[in-house]
Image (spheres, helix red, strand yellow):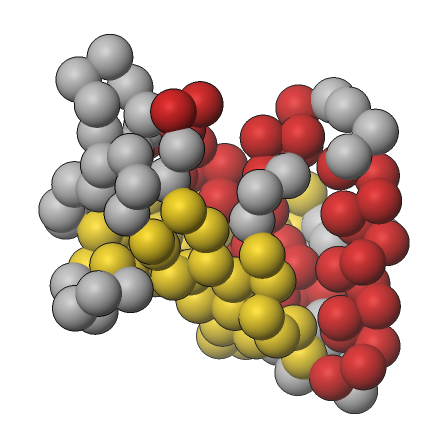
Length: 140
């Protein structure tokens, strides 16, 4: 899928996000690119994305891994599928005001299953906040 079409996909998704529902949690995520099985985004951690301890909420991180890996997969022209496995390893904290980069890559999209990886990093120094991956069933 061409870069233009991948970003058009993101624009359509974000129109739906801003209408409400659970995916509204990504409303402040800025997409940088989305094409050829890859998707990149960034966001500034705000008060709605932190836990009671003031750190980036693990559930929000998992939602980003879920959504952005799905967009990376869709940018290949593959069905968004359904999650079979989703996991996240939390390696370093982030706090309110931190700028975070998110990069997802489709490792393999086969007839039945797709494998996508994701990484969240601090923009200031590139240190890894979390690594995630998901497997999706795509044979629809």
